Length: 140
Image 1 (tube, helix red, strand yellow):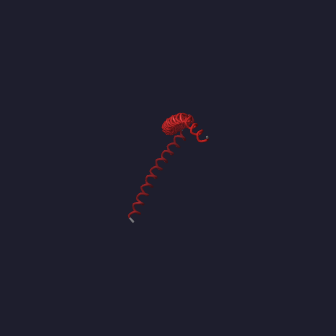
Image 2 (cartoon, rainbow, N blue to C red; image 1 turned 60 degrees about the horizontal axis):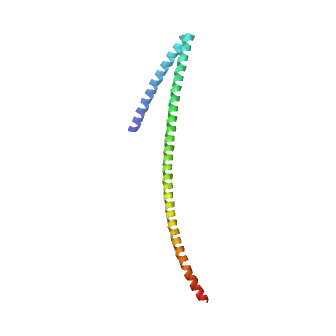
């Protein structure tokens, strides 16, 4: 019951506010009607021109706000894209550095293997005459 009473009070207050707003609007309309009824065509034209100028100025302000918002949004998106590009570039540089390091290690390992093979080949060639002799002795 208490809630219903509070809701009724709130609705009555809103109605009172709306009645006051409508009363002001009616007074403004009546005053404008009286001005238009008694105005000369020149005065009426001036009033229409002033109203059009006010409307144009309001449209310009709205357009400027919209344009500023669009530019700000575009700048934010560009900053995000730029930051992502920087991060991706840094990641790719690190990846390339790791790959270069791995290739350098592989190169060193291959050089070491080549040295071992060369040493093995040299020692094998120095043993070849002895092998030929031992083989020919067996076949004889």
